[in-house]
Length: 132
Ligand code: ATP
Ligand code: MG
Image (cartoon, rainbow, N blue to C red):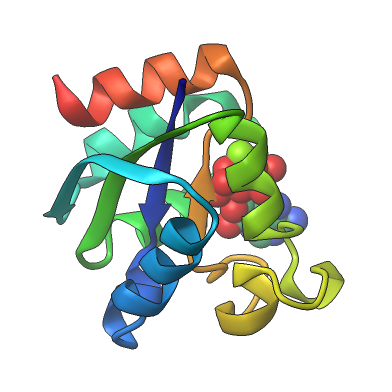
């Protein structure tokens, strides 16, 4: 059993997509170990996205993720990290495959509805940030 952090980002919470997105995880044998709705502040956002601090979109990214409530979840299951990434689809929804969460629900590369940890190391760090 593996754990990963999933976020339903503010654009999706705002559009009442929490249930539809959770359905995708449950239909694919991922279990919700922990879950909370939270409005993070700018300081938390900067810490969460610290690996992107040199990228040109860092400021917009931190503003966006702290712009409204999000849903944070620990997803659990076999191969949960990679499975979640596959269910999410490509970062840019215009490149995401049919049936993926981002293809179905995301608006743009910045308002892309979900986050998923990209490695075991990130999963550990991100779960501790949200759930300790
Ligand atoms: P996430 O980390 O949210 O799961 P990801 O791993 O697919 O997404 P990253 O490369 O880690 O993508 O980028 C983090 C977030 O930064 C993306 O989800 C997206 O919202 C934003 N982002 C990435 N690239 C760009 C870009 N070129 N322009 C604007 N925003 C971007
Ligand atoms: Mg990422």
